[in-house]
Amino acid sequence: MRSVSRHSRPCAGAARSRSSAGEGGSSPAQTSTSWSAVRRRSALPVNRRVIKTRATDRVRIMISLRARRVAAIVTAAGLVGVVPALAATKNGVTPTAPKNGARVKVGTQPTFKGKVSGPGVVYVYVSRSPKRYKDGTIDNPKTMADLEMIQRAKKSGGMFSTKARFFDYPEFWLNSPGTYYWQAHRIDCADDCSQEGPVVEFKVE
Image (cartoon, rainbow, N blue to C red; front, side):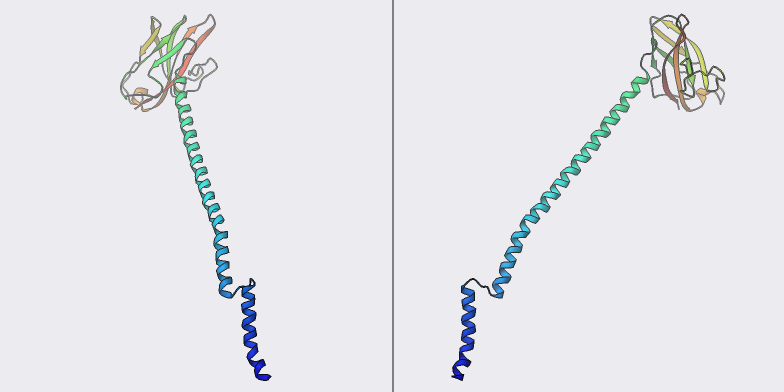
């Protein structure tokens, strides 16, 4: 009886093992294999989500960069649009030369000209400052500290013009490189003695 019981235990263990495997149990090798499959299946959606998130981020970055470029272009276009506005018509005065942003060579005599409509003589002012005073002109009536030129322009056929006088000494403004501003204005005291035109910026170089 003892010998039978000794030999029956391994058989019983094997039977139990086979029974458990046949009834849905799993061996260690089968368990590790099934876990690997589960991991692979669960990893697939995560990888897809990561790829989709990265793609979305790239699209957002591209849209942001394009928006910035468009904003920069619109801003630049807006700034360009401001330049002609400085030489627009005001009080019947339209300056045409030197144009806004023009460069005048040192030691030369530029001609200031433009279109004019309405009565009154026309004067041209040149100043180192674009600051306007109570009457709308760039002339400081008290000190004239920044004023470099006051000349009466010739007026004919709806046009005005005057050539700058030149005095050849080192401190003269046409011998001094820098930024200057000019303005033409009509004197018509029936309404306002200073019918000022737009202020135009130019450089002496």
